Image (cartoon, rainbow, N blue to C red; front, side, top):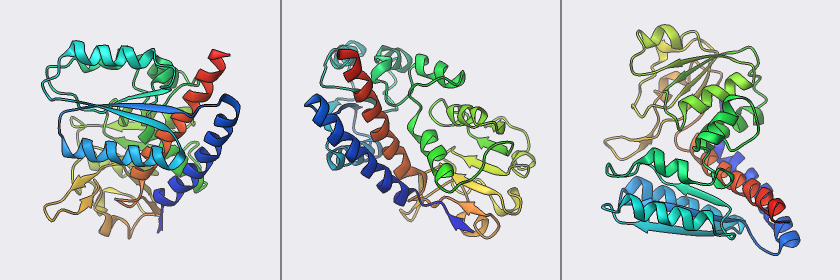
Length: 285
């Protein structure tokens, strides 16, 4: 069994981004800018935004966080996004999800300029991903693909089972795998007999937020396990959706939690923002 070390790869990617920022600054005289909208006081969201801010600082991005109260109005968020869309110093816009129930999340995501949609959630970018065209891809599944590539794991023709069908992870993950010529199956909360499907996976990718959902008897020998879940156990420890202790004895590769997919998500956000900055600079020439 070999660990897929996302922490080490994310450091490598940050070094590449840092070099790209220096080059960008030399040519344009400015630095890439990332703006984040954070609504409410959810501890997990706040911690994640803080990690993003620190990563931006490490690579030399300009970053700003728009912190808004839980009872914010739809109009107020829309006005902020419009302001960021029109701000030439902002290359990437990130809406930290989830948003409170009074907010129409779909409308908010659709309002973000697709050229600044570094999270890849705008329908324009979703469509480009689905049809295999270049655009912005959601950071977590993009990070998974980078991790597989780093370890020279061949995806072509492999049976890949994605557990979880969210717009943020499951669906884009399946699209990326399909674009890479894998045979893809998506399982979700209504899937009958999950074990029957997971046992067929050469590569099993799980992101549903259920501790120890995937047990040792649900994976075949030498399968590759990508644990995208992140949960806090009763003892306060961060754990994934896979029973790591037992499944790791049976698989060929596995991502740890923490230290696997998580760091890759932030690394891909940095990479996407630099990509947006370069494209936006070209448009302004």
